[in-house]
View 1: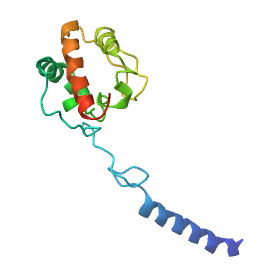
View 2: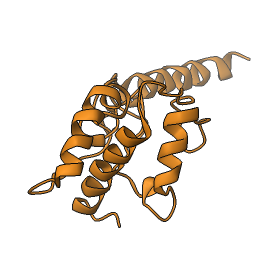
View 3: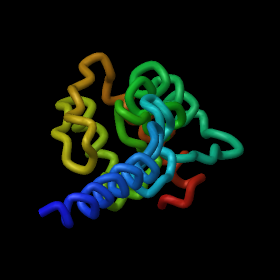
View 4: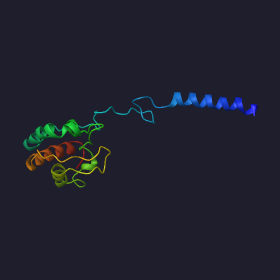
Length: 145
């Protein structure tokens, strides 16, 4: 029995040292890459050179209603809401009507783990149409057609 005690303790010590040395530090995931802090942008968004007048109105409405969860310039917000400048929200997958329905009725979480989006009763269909114009122009500027 004693002949297994020393090697067994050695294995425990090596395992403990490996754990302390190799475990992710705060702000890192298991691969060693940094994980974004809560509230950080999820994606990088390139801005178009100029916004149309409708998209400019949409930006104002977006900033007032959507940015708290979906982040500045629709880049998403870690811990709050997904980026709208993302291939998931390209027009062929989430058409404009999907945005209208989400604003009016809310939407059950299905692509992301942020929880469900509540309805936005203070946003008119016209506001949403302008917000969509803004988001679509951001998407096009980032190669999402």
